[in-house]
Length: 218
Image (cartoon, rainbow, N blue to C red; front, side, top):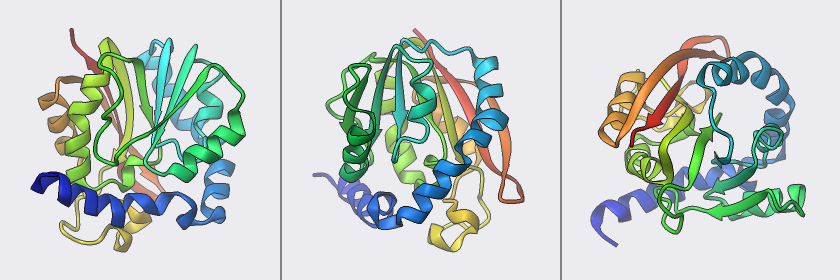
């Protein structure tokens, strides 16, 4: 493992693995409870504009599947991706047997094992807001690699840049350091053309988040 990968693995260990069983049932239950409202008020309007191809959808950082239950209604095939093995196990119990749904445990900074040009639509909501900028920078070329040419992405991320270097758990709503501009830069550099960026309020804080939609060019 090289120096970058070793550092990223340490970030995954200290931050990303919090979002399985360690974060507690209360968190997952609250997130599930709010899903209908988020889908109706935030997600669905963006999807209507984006008009993604749901032939093969990735639910990235799927957690316990609160987004999955919505995506299943649209997708011909759906792959759930998470770094936490316990989340994948929970989702298998929740959604199996369903030949429409596949499962993949990622490294926390890469998608090794997923073939190139796999997904027509790459989706993530209410997870990447907690990701360290170094992990997002590592993931972005991987997103571009596994999205098919012409495929699109819906990526919900932090837009909180007031406290560089601070532990994200000290920030409002545990938002990690990121900005819409930096996220767009990383996407474009990785081969994803940014289609739109929509600042998003969360917990009463205006524009603390952002939804970025992208397209993988041929």
